[in-house]
Image 1 (cartoon, rainbow, N blue to C red):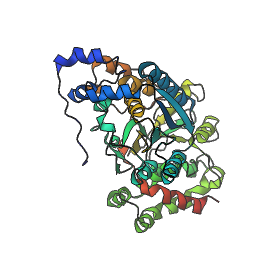
Image 2: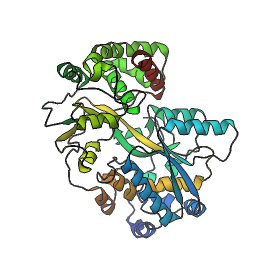
Image 3: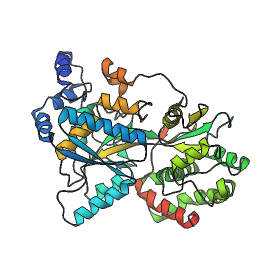
Image 4: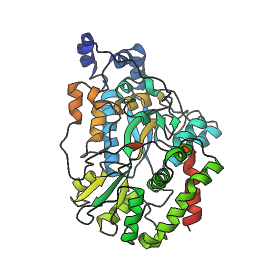
Length: 416
């Protein structure tokens, strides 16, 4: 991919003692190599740490999961203790709300806004980038960015086919994952074609979240990719056009028209969210559920909300995968504090805690095998029930410009 190359990494054993001594000050933000060493020790970064002290950072982030909220509270406590930063979790249900707020502030000429840091990706990033609502580039200048696996996880530099260019920092990985209860389902559907056949053989026992719910839209995109193999798929990774949309979605609408009568409530109603669908599966009403967190079933089993017989899997041919990011609006009041906060959230300590199934279970963006042994050990844990046994290939997200017309057309056809 044609993006900025990561900083050169060289082994410098003579710096090891200095790096270890600096680690407490940098709150675990270490990563292997000279790129981190230079930036972490630089006068500019130390000046930024001093500037950030005492700042309040208003972090707009989805608040739909207790485990995520608890993790953000933990991070806030660490930032207060280590850096003197007050991280305020502004709980939102949809990042589009935050985007509109920043858009309104720009239109009103507000140079000091209400948002200092935001959890975004996809169409929300595309809108903020195109409308000049982001501050940066900043991400690749953060010391902890040197630990990001930009080669093994290329979506850390591309967001729904839109180049990131340092305007947001990768925070976690996601891949469309499915769940079935092995006590009820002996052979899970491992492709869209198999899912359609499964629906016909088990009427009323399958569904998907109602678009524009993020997970429901993701399922539509997964179907689009599977129904447009080979060269036809290329158009999905380009800017949406009406002609391309009509050509690529024709098979999708035909397929949905055929399968909806076999779904829960004959496809006249849909679960309002992935959480609702998951609960319906846990209750035995549905046989299948989806998530964008490969560790979600393990989290639910550990919390006692799902049976230990629930299994996670992905389609053999691959499922949609992406990265979710942290960004800074153009009119932040705490640019230094936001950068230091994001740098800490990229540290091996914070990333490992976030990846721990007992805490959140959100996969890391770091190149774990490249970390020093002591930091690599943060990520070691024994397998637990419900955990994904084998990852399938991650398919890149279609261009973000496809999301709105896809949701609009679904609503027109099936939303009444």
